[in-house]
Length: 172
Figure 1 (tube, rainbow, N blue to C red):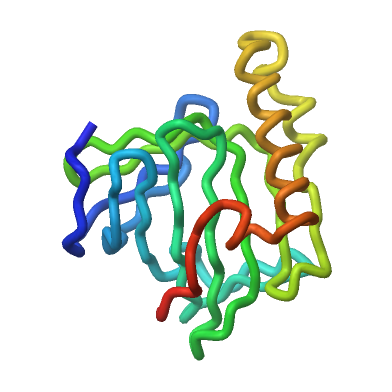
Figure 2: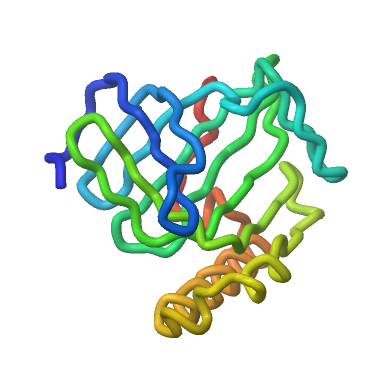
């Protein structure tokens, strides 16, 4: 584990899925308090990804929060003009930061919460059920389901920003 850091620097985020690297992308380290790593990164996908409830597109900026002791990552999604679109939450194994690399293992379950909090959607539960995780690592599967339930409860009750202690909205 890297030491806590307050100075911005460059890191690379590695998002893994089913034991393989799904995507790698550069990010700016905003903070690392030893438990939570926060980075800022431009949308790393190719072109536009339209989910129906939100579009990720070139120019979007993500402020991403990864925890070493929680089974999720929370991404604040901002449009190119800085407007908050909402939060995309990935259920993951706890993050690992080694020097300039932040690695997370995606466990298929996701949650979307719109900027105004009026829309909270559980996503990809079918993918999770079809994955091998429930059979090969039942403890991890239980932790993943509990993480999704926790995120949904927080989003519906107090909102993700307040409920997760994310502080005021960051300038992107």
